[in-house]
Image (tube, rainbow, N blue to C red):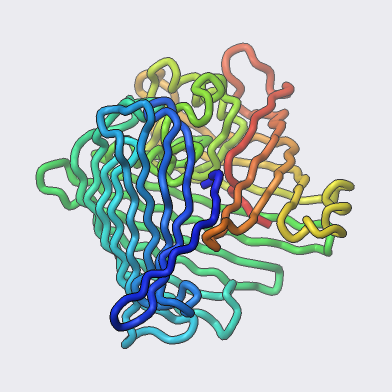
Length: 397
């Protein structure tokens, strides 16, 4: 989260060991809370450098518009398990409790990491999790038709692999979730995401991403898949999209902003958000897509790399091609989907500066021109000047 933060350091001496709490003020905005004022706190045993017991990440906020629930909070407490932990190979239990922007989520997670030597980019992670969650206030959601306000009890398994092949970096992520709440309809969601970097030389490289998502018939709508954006429930993971109004609603309705993730057929952002604005439901149970970005050098980034800011700021220039398919029929419009594609040019500005609490505080903003669509809407032509601004990076090179 981007916040105006002023560092305040307070050391709390525990009876048996020194424990440091590091607070910082936090400011954000959405239409419901108005200006949201709060404080964030990181806690750790002194000298463990965020790698010891009793790790705390918490925040509490007050909405100055004083909505129905003016106070919101987030608390995460992580406790390593010494019997299965060593350097770079920690096993831990994580407890998360959160009520903010109209969403109640209580989660317990078992995490285990296996790291290859001292290379933090070569590792495997397994997470087994269980959460109770519910939408408790529709007012925060920009498109409430894609949300359900029933309690869900989600048991899940997530696996992440990060490694290097002779061609470049390789990442894989597999996730399966099952709603086991006996008071609501059972459903299952599974996703697979693969990324491969191909490095040709120091100036040119290619990123390829494959994504597949499958959900059962009774899946809650916020867990279904869109063509051009991530699952609605994952909008909650980003401060810009967590609640309506941080980004102007009109910019979303006009298809100006694309939220990276899912099938990520970015050229169809306007069509999808136009449908959402009209009360439509452009979400699907089964999708598959391949995204590719060919990066080439640009003068501005070359200059920045030679300066001090090159360690924090990066400007990518790339050509992109997306292709994907929805494996179901739209019975309302009598449409059978075939393979869809888009292509264009893009520029991505990335900034990553650790905040005053030592946490990474990075973001990526993209400006992209999907000048070709295989399936344009209405009277649009296949080739046309289209532009959008993207939040987040679907392929990081």
